[in-house]
Image 1: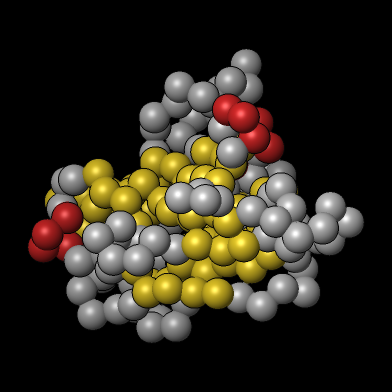
Image 2: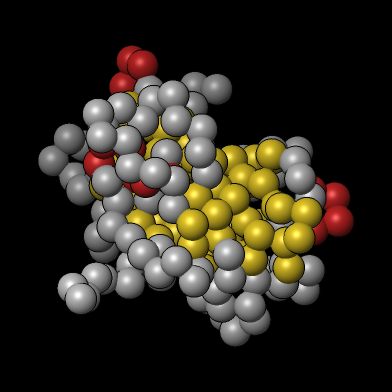
Length: 184
């Protein structure tokens, strides 16, 4: 039996540029998921042989983990402001989210400093509904790219809950979005 890596590595074909170079939609197979290749922990959407994920709406589903780390990397245009979000859903039988804090974190460039925000994934109000995190009723989560073309404008971002040690499950991730909101 061939040994496979436990972590799912992003498939670049599932990172879809928005029209006009205004950002990206990252479908589940475009995310790097810690423990994502282990069927005890995650249920991945099927691989699309054509590599065209644009119309794919199948989520990646978290069955159970104690270490949530779902990340992505994309190139940004210099001197722009980007809003970062995830489209998610909690299954009716979701568990482990009530008393823990999840975080959306991002940095520009390998040596950049992380910016972060707490993300609410309360089971009671969101079960069975598709919703955006962070909640846009509050402040959107934005990050600015460096102003020069020769700067490292690679955005590294993700959804994390690695501190509580508690088991959690029932989270479905439909996509992540990175959108140029310069001037908005």
